[in-house]
Length: 471
Image 1 (cartoon, one colour):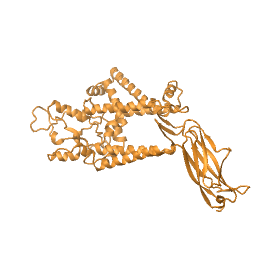
Image 2 (tube, rainbow, N blue to C red):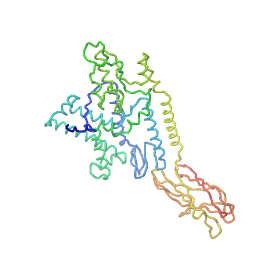
Image 3 (tube, one colour):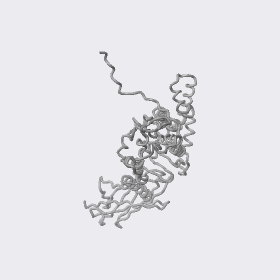
Image 4 (cartoon, rainbow, N blue to C red):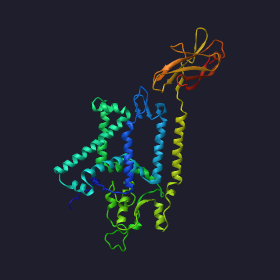
């Protein structure tokens, strides 16, 4: 008996050529694609006055200065909790939309979906609609095929180059960096980043497409935990569509004419009639395609529709589906909305109450105190003042506590120091108690350092402790 070859555990990828479709969901996807890409490409070019020492850019990630600028908001490294809060809000928002509408993020706003849609649009514009692209794929390599492929890949590369270029513009002054890129005088890291993002955009959007969603993205495997029987998602009304069949005589047949329109428009290449699948991104293009067919054959729309598992059970019992608001507003989504709102309100409160002066005071504890030649007791403190303005500001330092205590600054006879723009200044501060005074003889005395920006009038304080000789 001849030995049979073991079956392969892997299958070659079958290319997917989605057909053009019109409808309300396709129109919605066009709008979202235009808005999101417009925000991404245009935002670095929005101007905003940042003073003489920074680029006049509205949104800027200043890696050298370790700051993030968003219009009038400036985030410093010690305020990273704002970034953490925004990430938490993004996660909760993803949970909220998934629990209410399934993988709506994947189907409409995910960067992989948006750029893949753009690449498919270019492909359709150059090579034609689905049938033309299928024929071109199966045809031998001719001059026409080579010309169309090279043209298409060139446009894809230009899109990838614009994508990488837009990304690096967020980290420097966009007009200046653009000019340096053209003159080949930009930093090497700029060209490296552009090259990497151009290549990944070209490969992910042009060739891998649905494979990124199925094999590389973890969300399809996580999102099931966010969904329940009341989550709205794209589904097929099998009780209405089965049994399928073609022809004019439809006695005993369902509404589905097995035209494969829903399959041909799917960017993931799946058949929604087979039930819920991990690959489905709920982009709803199959709804548009099916509704178009239903109208042509005189059947009601909605054979494929946004619906929940609970609605399926109700319709099988002859009951109408629940109103949409009952799917959207339920305990799980209300919980996510409440948590999302609490984090957002907390960030807004923290943003508006944060002090315009950032200062730290650290007592030098080795030694705790020094006895001077006249018998006075001196404590030493390291004070760090951060100037978060675009120009140098003078800061006055004063002391509140026991009236016998006096303040001195190292290196200057004055109590005012000038802190350079956008820098942290270290100033050593001395607090001295005269011989025989209460603070000099006590174990410890509470003191308060006041710091005032003499230009803006902003004031802040830090509490600390003065250590006397009675230790």
